[in-house]
Image (cartoon, rainbow, N blue to C red):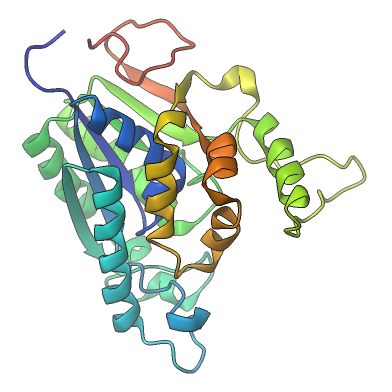
Length: 276
């Protein structure tokens, strides 16, 4: 227990990553009076340009994309009432195997220790009680997500400040609900590969998830946050759901607790269990 204001820090790879997996907790905990800090590691320059133009295609201007995505990130933070936004400014590395992985200044090409030292400075400044980032595979193997995981865990080890650390995840059961809803609204959803017809091995079995946070009361803010990033094609199908159905599908955020000094029992429904 502590008399000072509690603090949550979420470490993400790109502008818009904060919206889908942590938009609800950022909005909820800000509303509860907790200081929220979003750290965005890259500039998003490998994202879609205006009109959906892809990196490497004629008309894709990375610097224009960077400026656009920074404005979108600011609007997203306003929607979620994020207290502090910090950007590390590394170049977006693109998808695994792209030439951008090895470009000078690319996040994936940056020594982990160097970036971890910068993040450790922010941890010392804000002294977060709870830190949230991705798992070892960056959830789906994106190099910048993997790098965000690596530098976060290294920075936590350097500082030994956060009482709790979480990795974002999705329960396997949610993928079937997602596919059903996509079909209901007429959005094409890829069928599972393989003869078993099972969903891809993303996320975790439900019984391996330690923390289930109800963020449904903040579904409107989460939807507004994602809508701020509407330039990115991968967000369009979420926005097609509309706010009500989006909240039904995305109104709970789930995590695996990987560091804890509180002794709070799991499963838990609050990232700050044991701290207040």
